[in-house]
Length: 208
Image (cartoon, rainbow, N blue to C red; front, top):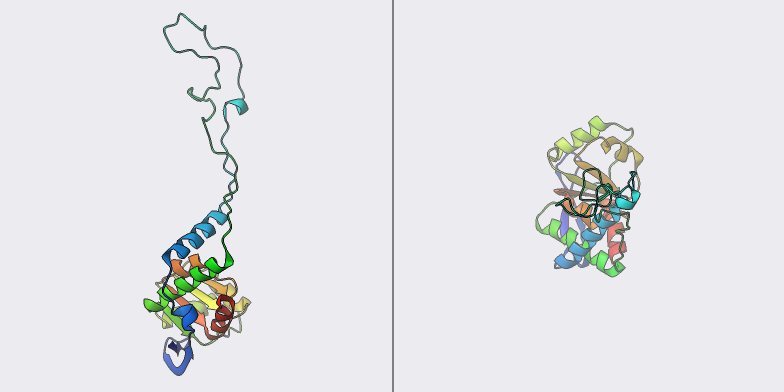
């Protein structure tokens, strides 16, 4: 699959790059995507939620009223969850939400995510970026030139580039990652995926 390379000014160049059909041209597998995104979101959860139950509440252990003869329900503790200021009944406890998936399934999910972006023409390939200094204004200007300033963008670099990353860090709608750390959720969560030319080889090597 041949894709034209766009310049950082947003203009089409005479150069093009071949995308592997085994990675960018497969039939997307929705269930693999579902499992991978579910795992990603689950693994991000801290699981530190905690509410006090009746055994953890500070309060008197005196019986509130006599057992019989009041005409009301029995009440033995001020810490009961049915009373104001009492403990939470079956409240949340700390737990680990992490679960594992097979590597082959996660690769299939990433391939499917990229395939969807190619089908919807939301994947753009650009020449490798060269930022001499950390400057957010220059990065914003580049996004404006590419008409992506109002879109949620995922930019994938072939290798770590601190100048590009730090220039984009304050922009809410832009996320810059390296090709070896991209995940299914980030690809699908972006409206446009901008790939540096050097990132394609890395991604194809990992996913194949």
